[in-house]
Image 1: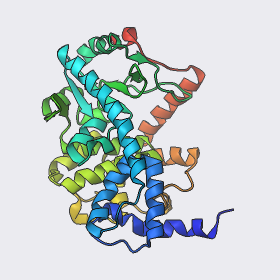
Image 2: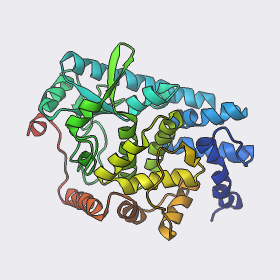
Image 3: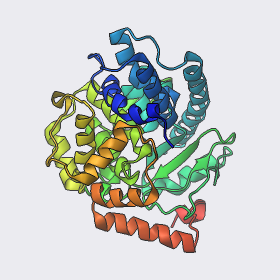
Image 4: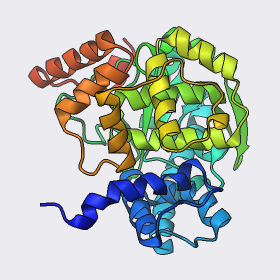
Length: 357
């Protein structure tokens, strides 16, 4: 049975969301509510990213730190070790003449976060050219990286755009090689070769990081959020999107064209509408959602986000949301058929031989 205080949390947390969506405006919630919101946010996305996205409101409103500093510092120390191995992998690949584009994690950390260690992830997603994939795997395997370093889901590895994780020697992080930035239909708008052509370069700690333009980053986050069924794991993508939007400069016309051409306009609209309903100023958006989302399904989704997924949504609800708010029922059906096939015959497509096919 839920306590009276837990019943009131979602209502209070609706106001606390303004710490993220409108960090210059006071949230109409008490300090206890803000502290509870921050703790729950840290549970879902990690203390580092939670602290980074809360920092603007903390500073603007004179709140002090909502999360224990030692907890945040510990998360950053773990990220420092992961970043060390990730940068070592990038350096080895560059020395071998293998071009890569950094997707999400490290690229977003360096481009949009004041303290990059707050956003360095557990893995490094790297786009490689198909002809270079076998050499890229061999390059890291020669340095002690190995497949099957991370726990795979019950149905095994079913992705078609990427390989299973290639784990660092100390298992603190992994590299996920991608032949496309994300699963179909992302490549309809931004296939592998085009992403290499349009990539940007940042100089960091003696490394040249090549990553995606802001519009492509937002589209990739929306695509990932749809794959995550707009559930708890999609929250990290939404916070990344907020950091991109805070920076400004996204080309709305180009963004609309990419979302439409890729077939990802519905998940993109879902992400934008959620952020708006959670308090984001419409003026902060590069373009408005193409259609208003309403109805019982969306309202329940919004309540889950307002309450930071307490309780967690069930598996069947997640599957429904994947079809309802994702890239379409055909995409969802295809992915779930692969999951079903993987339960019958566990899939793991790792190793140099499979990569070279």
